[in-house]
Length: 112
Length: 111
Image (cartoon, rainbow over all chains, first blue to last red):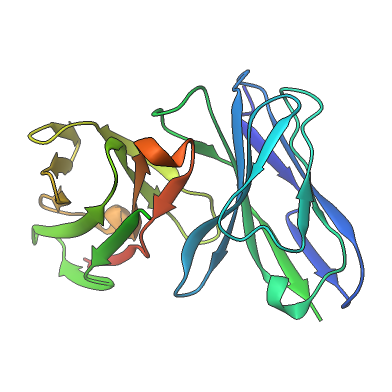
């Protein structure tokens, strides 16, 4: 099993550009989440999904969109990148509520 | 709103010098408290889940304990490879699947 995979590993964008961060898991987990990690702020939840076709907002959803068309994939879209979105982004999955989340290796995003 | 506070922010230990990390939390009905380890440039790696006060879990030199207000991660006779950031997170009954993380404790173990 590859676990949770994320692409790309690094990305530099200019303000106003859009892009999609990819996340995939091969553990047949229903629950998937996107977090951002900033120095001094810890991990903050952006969006999450409890299954294919179902998504909801987390703590810091503004500027990001998600969709979940399959159990395996949960892409995160930045609509119009801003310098405030410079961060490290982690995708995670878990089999059910109350169970541990498995994290991907992260995407380091810089917005100039 | 669920809240998690970890202390200290950073901890320097000599190899073999045991210590404890604290995770204080407020939550509306605890579904679970999670400990993760994060190495630089990598994603968090799951260590333990604790579900109720009085529960304890152990793995090698790490032992996690839980009370109604806080959790401790005890590191016994640490080695340099235990150097990492340790993250605590809670899942509350009112929060659905939303984990709330603390800011983490950076641990450096010197040989």
